[in-house]
Amino acid sequence: MMRTSLLLVFVVTAPAVAGAQPPQPGPPPPPMVVVRGSGDVRAVPDMASITLGAEQLAKTPKEAQAGVAKAMTAVQQRLTSAGVPKDAIRTTNYDVQAQFDYANGRQTLRGYVARHTIEVRVDDIDQVGELLDVAIAAGGTSVQGVRFDLKKRAALEREALTRAVADARARADALAAGAGSAVAAIVRVEETGLSVPEVPMMRMAAQPMAGDMAPPVAPGETVIRASVTLTARLK
Image 1 (cartoon, one colour):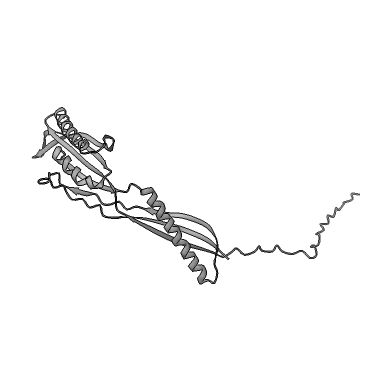
Image 2: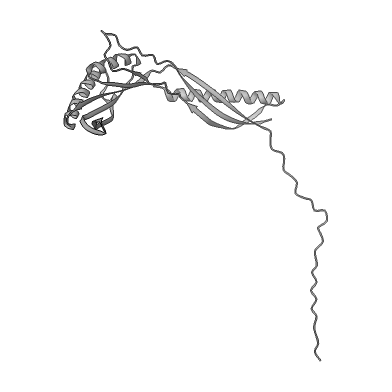
């Protein structure tokens, strides 16, 4: 006779601990304000960069290169004689290209044109008009423009940032006062923008001025604008 054994397994669940409390939430975060501030600094440009060039058309590349070299050498010599340091003159482009005439669906080689373009840094902005006249009279065939700039750009940018932070702090104080509180501490300040709009380049025809009259140049005024985001904790 076979006997069947029965194994009983009892699972006992421990009773909940008496008096256990759910985790309590931490203290609420302190009140904060986030504001944006901006600051402007206005300045009259006190330096400039002149971009000008010379070109020569000839029957062969060699003749074109020789012609443009002669013209640009004369231009650079006249500029240095007028007080421009040699290290303030740099070549920005040089190329030689074939030129064609087109008629009745056919192209005919007209010759080769060589172009040499230089950029001239002018530290005395009152000289810009005179130097343009000098360069054109010496053989320059194109004045591509004049770009104005600021010698103390970095210092003016920092001043604009300082004004932007002061503006943001004043806004934070105003918000806090309106809420019946006050700023306890500045938590974070982030730079969100810094712009120095370029003064549009002045363009002019490459023709000598009559007599001793230099072309008039007016740099105008540029505005450096900075913006910041400020986060402050309230009391």
